Length: 347
Ligand SMILES: *Cc1c(COP(=O)(O)O)cnc(C)c1O
Image (cartoon, rainbow, N blue to C red; front, side):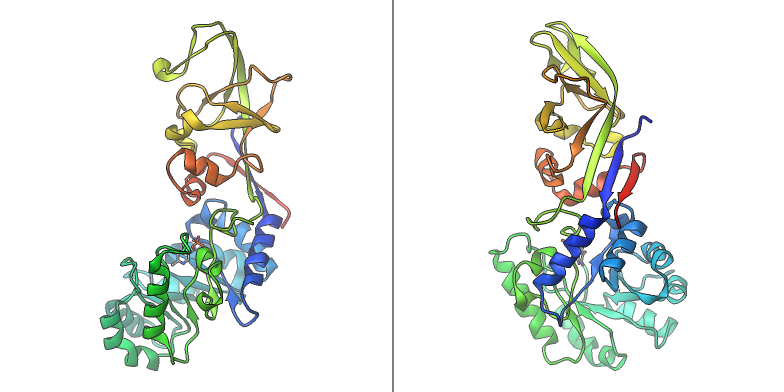
């Protein structure tokens, strides 16, 4: 087999959910965000493991993603859709019993006309300017919306990965002003907000990245491991070069392992110069440019020929790779390509 192997530790995923659940009071429900194919790890196995751990409410970005979750978990869980009720979503929302998070007056009208009595939530914009009703829009719609018994009112924090950012308290205050005194469950926090303390928890929390082992949840257990098979080993003399553009020249006798993965698998070219793969605990630097399907790695210093090398795992987290590429763990995870084999451990 010559494709990269992504191993997903479902027990670690479940433990991360339980640990984030334990941060908030028993009166706060901990949901799970499984959008973008469960942050790239496989929506169905991820959702099954989280349901087994105790999650009863799942969030997806778009109605289409709800189908996979409903198929995996059956009728007993609630599936909330961040993008709300879009034109063309009505059949899916009804047939799969999805709960759209209504984002605008237009969506509200569409929802109550198309599916009167069907559950829905409300999404408010408290300053991120991305999704949800703004204060004026909410003020205009509030009475009508409340008569239809929304199941949840939510908003989203823009800077929760920086706990000291002024924006957090500003958004908290805006959310309270828009929702205090209403007899509807509320939700404000994703992973970052959960870690900021009880005043951010309300009735439902929505962790995503922390479940999958990413920052800002520093205590998260490692969930993903990515092993790349070595296809060839070659010996270079001083002065020979590796890869496209001859960007790396061997300073002396060198052994290069060519491993089977590349930028087509979401291992972006930009990480090349700063990134190592690992043979057990021993770091092995990437040499030359990352190709579409192949990467050159220096293994001169290894005492045994490696059968494979590890890019992600306990030695090197998704956030370390993200740093090397000037991005965030979320983007590393959701970039991991469809070509690699996903294997599930535990669950
Ligand atoms: C993605 C997302 C989440 C989960 O955020 P994490 O930072 O991954 O925990 C929660 N709520 C909304 C609205 C989101 O878009």
